[in-house]
Image (tube, helix red, strand yellow):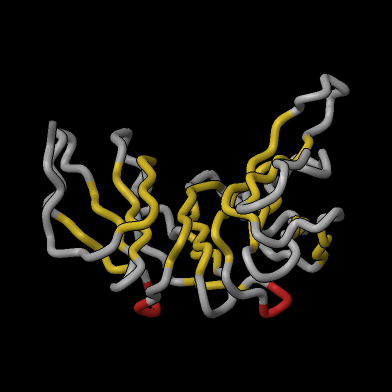
Length: 185
């Protein structure tokens, strides 16, 4: 087992994904008490390069990787407590020059995911919010999210969100893991 070191406190979320397009898995760290980071794999399971994600964003509860702008590389999705969640667009080399604040000023996102919920071929963003209703942000196809849909049925208190075709009808359903209520589909 490899040990990742670097003095990062309170990593709440971790994801392995090829962020620099070199064919090996890099590591994304969603940190709460310090800026979130990407650790670039040297190809041998070591991570000599650590890149602080732009903006010095702390209070990350959830991190995900998905190609939301359709350019063939993986972008970073940050579910943030205390401010709006963000998408960081990848330049293709593991750097993230463009940061997009997700619409609605939504705060206290505990879980973030991407899935083609509306079936139009691009990845939408799912926000599992704790203090407000959870949402699906529909992608316009270019990594912008002009349409925000509030999930029905008392979706506040969400700790986890995902999408899958659980009823077998050919479209994706949204799954919510809630703090003190029955889980919802």
